[in-house]
Length: 118
Image (cartoon, rainbow, N blue to C red; front, side):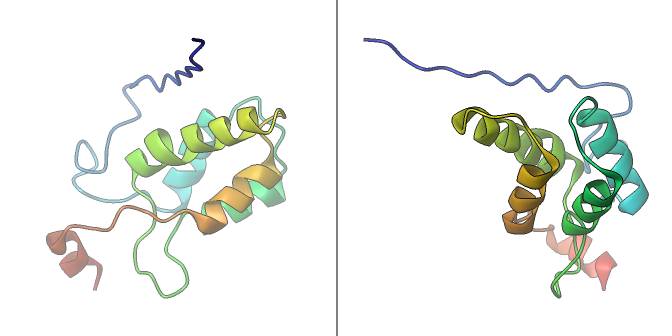
């Protein structure tokens, strides 16, 4: 029997910490999300307009007062997009990332975090 296994490594770096870690429970703002996405997607063919849309789609939107956590982006969103590209036999593209971000649901905040977001 042949099993298909895929491993995605997302190394922790001094600048990549969880929302509950160094960031004091704060979720990344537009600037921090853009920085994380640019560093994580270095080498991916993505236009400035696509990056801007990704930043917006991963933030608060559609009446939701919270956006993605650092972990949402590093451990769920980006690895999921990579796996989707592999499954489709093509490259990771801005178009794929935007489609995935449009459907992505961030981790719901803890009650204390929601109280601070009001």
